[in-house]
Structure formats: structure tokens, C-alpha cells
Length: 127
Image (cartoon, rainbow, N blue to C red; front, side, top):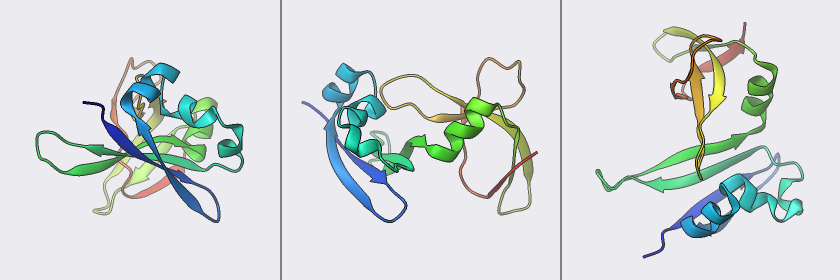
């Protein structure tokens, strides 16, 4: 059975949804490459979100697989500070996982080899 995912493309003044099968995304390497196959989709693109299903809980969650600001911070190796809603502060660099729906990672130190999934709640600043 082929899984179909809802992919939301977010632009400055609008958004649009497309449907992507897991097989099609994997053939292109990942969701971003699938979206980029039609270059018109990339003009002004700010963010790509994929609605994912959790088989254990039966619920859904949103996986951010592209964000223009996160990409800039990742490429520039900018140190980020996040202030959570409870006032907790964390500092990290942004990395990215591999796979057909990559996610952003919190890399604690420059010499770390990996990290956990980026927690998007709170306020982000550069340090």
C-alpha cells in the first residue's frame, strides 16, 4: 500500500498543498527534490511542511523539511539561541538529517556528529 503525504508549500502571501507518494519522493531522493522538479514551485518559497502520520499513536504531526531561514543559518554555521516559553535558554547550531523527509537538527557543538530534532517552540535569536 502506497502512503500519500500532504505537503504544504508556504510563500510570503499564500500557501498551497500538494500530495506526494512516499515512492515518488524516494525516487527523487527527498521531498524537496520532488517539489523542485517544477521550478515554479521554488519561486519565493519560504517553507515546506509534510504532514506525517504516527503509527504508534494514530495521530499526525508536521515535519518541516525546508525553511529558508533555517537553511541560511545552517549554511552560515550561525549559533542560535532559543528561549522556550518557560524561559529555558538553549544554544545550538542547525544541521539537517538525511532521508526522503529530512528534518532540522539541534547540533550542540561545532564538533558534534549529530543531534536531536529541532524543537520549534520559542523565540530564536542569533548569538
